[in-house]
Length: 189
Image (cartoon, rainbow, N blue to C red):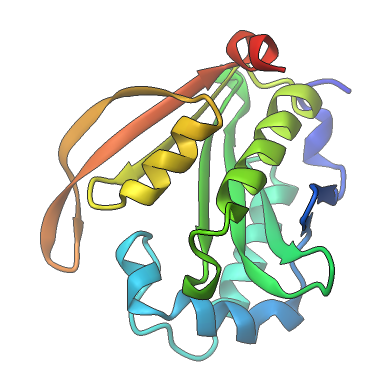
């Protein structure tokens, strides 16, 4: 598979010990609205709060369009044993630079169970081995220490802080940045 073949391919499904990462369906919208609508989730993401009717459906359509254009691939994170929707993970791809920005979120009931680490590991493997990316990086807001621990557990390197890089809920927030190169991923596997 060449680097550009992913632009036309369907979003694959990825499996881990406990998770199924699959393409989104419009039927996921109510679960997205409920889980992403929690203030705790919104505080660590760019999701609007409150998360109003129709926003989840539009977000799903936006993810599909980004995939079709070759600029992103997004997965619904579900529990493998009973297909419960628990969150989302994506790669925003810049093909010319062979890199992607990794982003993810989980609903509050699914925090602190290792699901984030499991999903991130699967998407790193997919990004490096299937999309042939050279670098994957992931930022998180400074106050979100749990995301930093996930990125550390999968072997990403802390690359620094971007001070007051975004405004969230009316306040400037720092961004913590982690990254991994394909050769570093290969050394770990």
